[in-house]
Amino acid sequence: MLERRLAAWDIFEHTPWPTVKDEDWRRTDIRPLKIAEIVPYAPRGVGVGTGDGSETDAHAVLPAELLTELADAEQGGLLVQINSDPGVRQLKDELARQGVVFTDMATAVREYGELVREHFMTRAVTPDRGKFAALHGAFWQGGTFVYVPRGVEVVLPLHSILWADQPGIGTFAHTLVVLGERAALTFVQEVASPTWADQQGLHVGATELFVGPAAHLTYVSLQSWGRHVFNFTHERARLERDATLDWVVGAMGSRLTKSYMDIELDGQGSTARMSGLFFTDDDQHLDHDTQQNHNAPHTTSDLLFKGALKDRSRSVWQGMIRVAPGAQRTDGYQANRNLVLSPGARADSIPGLEIMADDVRCTHGSTVGQIDEEQVFYLMSRGIHRPEAERLIVEGFFLEVLERIPFESLRARLGREIARKLGFGM
Image 1 (tube, rainbow, N blue to C red):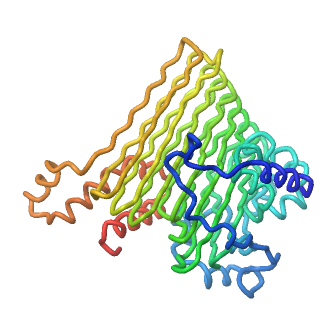
Image 2: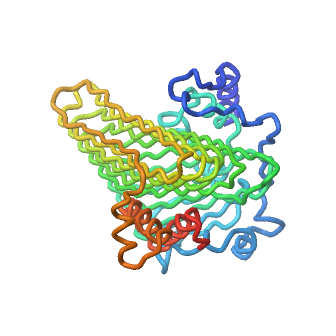
């Protein structure tokens, strides 16, 4: 791992910082980031706060809503990390007996070295994918490792939380998920922090998802960083033959986010669905860059991103469906819908297709608009005041994506955040 860190650092030193002259950064200016003032967090290797890593310590540090059990009943495992320090680590005994691994990345490097060596930044997120990918490869600390052996179905969800509660630090969490043939898993990952008014924060993350033949992964990723955080991530999934991925993204926080999310449909018959929602306000800037790469024939992808914007905030979505030569019978779709709620807000939506096969069906759609005044009039004519009418319309706009989140508690929490951003203080 030390050799890999040093190699990544060498790439970082020889890679220029991205600027608005680069095509995929043309709409995202990172000059306000004062990276020289940010210190990479150094894990202490002890429990949460001053405690011993018990669940009691986690309850004392984290907001209660982050620890709400996902299915309102039971979950298969819980992993909590504070600033990359290990805290709670729980896994059902039955799952452990079946060979399921659910642990922090530092432990995975020590105890599951062969699995990590094979997959860690080798075929998904590699250090040469950009300045921040290389920085992550050099400085990564903390994160989550999940391994589900061949034929094992994890019925209860696994839940991982990273909470960053120190100002002026940089976190570099790495997520690595490996599913064997015919394995199944639902995995929910959350990153969050309070907001510090006078200091910046930085998160440079990477997520690697490997879905084996005929395996099924449902992956829910929720981002609620404080408004002082600059968030840069590279996330990539690789799907083998007949594999299925259902990927749901919720982004509400950070001052600025630049996130690359790639799906590689490597195996014939593989299927992926990506669903995203975001809501920006104040001066937030969220930039999501998605890729649906059909590398084999008879593959299917479906992407839907929905966003609402208010105040002076800005969103960027850049999407691409790429069909490789020979990837016949591909079916790909992407759509981005944006609801602009203030005159000063702006949404840029750039879909794209790159087709190098002749027997495919690939389409895309993109819309940017305001609340329909006819809908507002209809609700107000039935005695509903305008602010409440607008709230109902925005909630209805997001409903299609919210319904794809398989847990009522998470849907309710995102609903409360949407209401709060609309000024309802819920």
